[in-house]
Length: 486
Image (cartoon, rainbow, N blue to C red; front, side):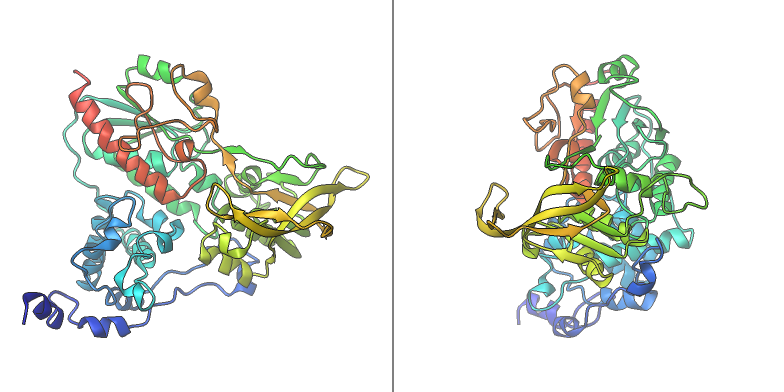
């Protein structure tokens, strides 16, 4: 009998179950609020795994020698390593294992599309459901925080180098977390009055509680990262002026904050929001809590959200919680092409969202006070694939129909924030306004200037932005130590 077969027959370590036994274990379901209850509040929908559920889920890990899940993780988390620590009942140790490469586990465990990254390549998923890696990541991060077991990592001696990070979204926070541990002085400049970027203004409380984001930022501050909020770089100070202030390297992570509209008749009617404005009013400015905050927001009875991504799902589910009697998703392709996470679409359906698929708005109709009251739509069919690889929607002539709506949220994507490119000579961008970088180092056309996240890719996921931040931090450290003289 070969050594490999012996190992399969007699597993070592905390997981004593044989592979065939592990493969028979059911995937643990995440407990969640009842749909009829949660549409009336902004509390987080999933409750998280309890200790026993987490242990049972960890038992399903096959501890594969080639670790495909690690290859599928943009921030290189040692997934089998942290799962093994759960089985050893060292949950805080599991959280610290994740934090060796991922500074934001409580966030990533909640909002990252694991089903498209680490879980899609899980070996056990070839014959059943993959290990719930995202559930376990959230579990260990929450356990560490709730049991007050958070420990600061070892910080290298000061290098004397100073780094400026523009934007405190997932890319910027990742760069900060990696570079502060290497001994560099790090300052994050955030335009809004709270740190977190899209994590605080773009993702609703019911999907990502803001206390979680604040806890992650507080952890960064405890490590030594300095936050300067309400500071608009490109307006108050430029990139060149940051260099003049003594910063040796700069990372740009300003995101894709410029909303896109459809450019159709009636789009300037009262009651038509960009998703950016609608979600920012509710999330960052707390319009959902009128007893404590006086932020104005239109509370429509018939809400229509245009788009099929996570932002669209966030918007339509927010509309329900703000009192909508009918909430519609209007998307020009079919459900298969929807970029939103499967879990978010599932939650939206549970909550009663009505899906108008293969449907495209062509005109907004207003009342005598210039308020939107309806939307004319056209049915579509799928043709040949376009540049995105998805089949192109083609209008069906004569299929026009009307959807009654008093609030429309346009969630069809965002363009990159133009402020820094417009005020930074020599910073190359593509035709869409995204900053051009070296894919391996995230260095821009300017020496000492790096960029990552949505400002480079356009609207994407939290974990891909964090992955870009990780690449940038690695390259910036090399640059700071080899090319910056002190």
